[in-house]
Length: 186
Image (cartoon, rainbow, N blue to C red; front, side):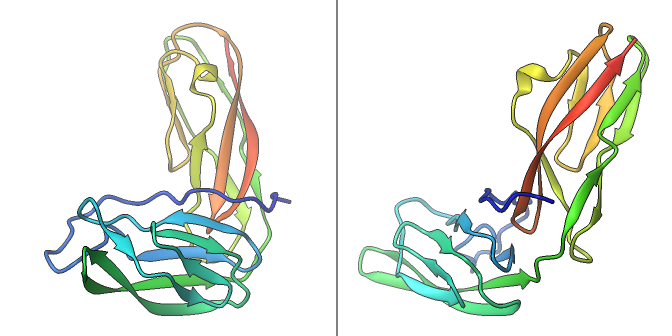
């Protein structure tokens, strides 16, 4: 079962409308999992008015979201993004999901040096409709020519034979666990 730890949320780049003060305004969280994420403003030098965003979750003046969600549901809260004495309001949506257990699958990938490697790390379980994210935590362990993407894709053309054990952090709505992906290249 995944450990109950904090993790940064991966944000997807998108066009920011002119009336938006934040790069991303929707966050996916899990009941009972401590939050440590940041509101990313579209301009430098702003502060945030501290407030509650959902049951158990607050934002501080630096834009740090913190706390532990206590209830599942979708919460829309208004944050104030301030520059000097003027503030602008921006709605933020927190989607707090029930803590649904999940486990990793496909953690061993065989391949041949000089031949394309094509695989996917996956998960079983977790809340429906939530896309997991995958983060390599020690890039020096990834063999030359191979990559592990944030979507769990394992690919590339391994340059040399060998066995590599790559530490990867998998997160599903803030519920994260560390795993070891084994690449066996002959």
